[in-house]
Length: 129
Image (cartoon, rainbow, N blue to C red; front, side, top):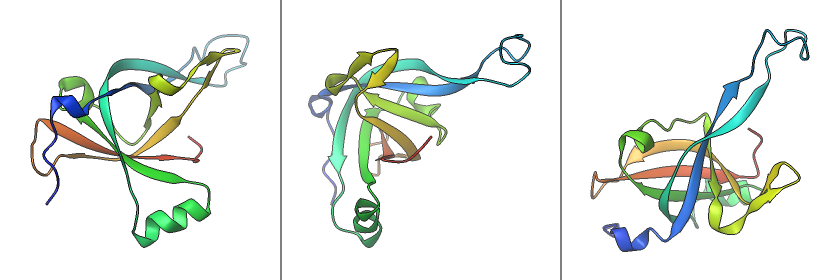
């Protein structure tokens, strides 16, 4: 049986980003739409590292690391979909105009099975997004 989450487990700070189209009418990009990651919100989270399963082990061989990020359910976190990404704010910083730290791409969002006050967000590093 899974451990029931609590607010005390949420010890990490994370930021949620979504891709937003730039100005397609700008003469600089000649009609091409430029997509940039834009931070939507930050919150507290708990990281649960996955070990075991065949898919997890196969992903590690390909340089991907899967884990679950638990966050409190809120209107902001319920809006997260698989085209978002998560940045670990505790282990990174902006360097030369780019984020130098862990970036996790969202693969699935599900309500926590024990307590619907939390969401389980399956994320993966080592993938392009």
